Length: 584
Image (cartoon, rainbow, N blue to C red; front, side, top):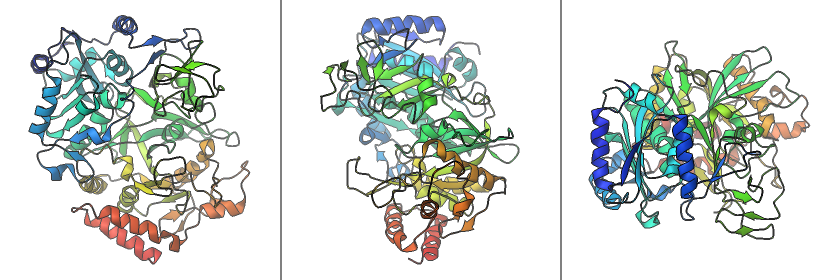
């Protein structure tokens, strides 16, 4: 039971090696010496380029294939014995068909390459939350990224011992063809096969694949929650700290909230980062819900990140970080659209071509990324490595809604809170492709990441409510309400701390609220606006419900729910109750 792979691991690695036929097999140990050696190998092979060591110490630059720059949801499959188990919002493929289809692509694909064996833990070492996995890959980009994103190395062998309970993660770039690219999840086998992509979201299999799709299936079976949520500690001027978990769809400020800096007028308030993307939650011995961030790093979108939107993220990625598909400046530093620095006079763009400001194409890909150790974050919470996690007082859902949806409201109870999460949505804006105002439902921000039928997922949330004697209170926020001219009514960013203050007051039984058709809401003067230049009429608008405006909203909710034949009766009941309260 030492720091060596067990017989189950060795047998699986040998079996996979017979399929992909690598020239050699390298077993990663997670040491610093190994990091230096593999980094040198990656630079020599052209997988990475070292950035300016004076301005960006320890940072590397990677450019992916141009057809391989994002998660490919249409090529992502849940491979359960029956299609019903995967549900109507997932792509499904029968397990035998998937193993055969991907096996044919994998066959011989490692010839001339090295198979890297990556043992890793999602979660803290020795934590009751944590899960052991092994990823096989032919990509040094994956190896060096997994070093940052997971707890990788000999500790995984120690924790696994002689057990056969580990997630089998098989990855290969093959020829990077879109026609031969598949990301398949086998929940019953605790396995993930990903072929044809080198992009992080498709290739770092501890990320969404394991931490949400596979872990979510395990969580339902074992009685916990695996969620697409940030975790943050909010400390008041008296030094009291409470923790929140929050789920937002993409482009709704999730990482910004995880690293929020309160406004200068709210002296003494602090926000501490536990995690920016994934939360695993279990009922603790005290009857509360406790959460850990199973990751060891941040994998964030670079464009739009700057010292105004997220100064803590900028400090986090200033050293010992990886950059993918950003622009490369002539001085060996990087740039992207929305950076603090003005556009460079000349750069090499994400495609590897000369770029100048007069070009119509962006210099950095819109989904260009940074990969950074969580330990770099200047406001990382002292308990972020605690094996027991942190106690959660509030769960916050949110979306980008220019109209109707108020700044903040609280659910009536846990069951109603599950309904609030199940109806989460964002509306397309003029800057997004698609029809203006089109509503995109993304329940709990989990639509692309739920590893089984989403209606069963809601049922699991409802069942969890029966198992938590002291559940967190559930809220919904909307930082994005606009006036008729398209101007944001709420200033957002650090000012969101004012809404969090009301939320935490509600969790302590202190905050005032009035009942509305959608939930408990603050009156306009219940939100602390000291030091904020905002018209009282705007605050009133931000916290007003117009029932007539909600008719289209509830109709859209009904259309979304109609695709689930096994929707829980409690969700249907909450839907009908909302219609009745709104009079629609």
